[in-house]
Length: 147
Image (tube, rainbow, N blue to C red; front, side, top):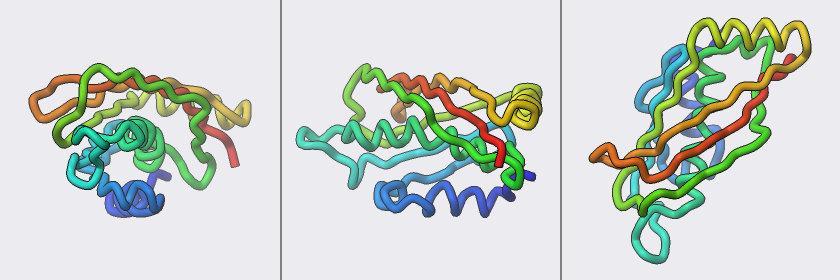
């Protein structure tokens, strides 16, 4: 069974020390949908925009957050196999990312991982600023693995 929202929030925001230091916040954690935010404050680079590593982390964490809210953690665990990030413009404010997985896709992945020991899925995400401008595009290949 998936984790309750408050436990998923604690894992998402606090379990990885780097993520906690960057002050990532899980604004929405629901089965099949997450929205995460990282503040510019404390995550600036040498020119005052958001550090590329902070943007990369914000793009990667939704795969784990979706796992916590959507998959049976007693049977499966996630890994990231590949991650790409395309920067489009400097991020000069707080940045948000949303990730979705449909109920049918979640069920398909669990069934496939149960039968084969693993199942891959792709998350293509947009990192946006406060005005809705896309500052970066990401593509992550994740794998759901059977315990």
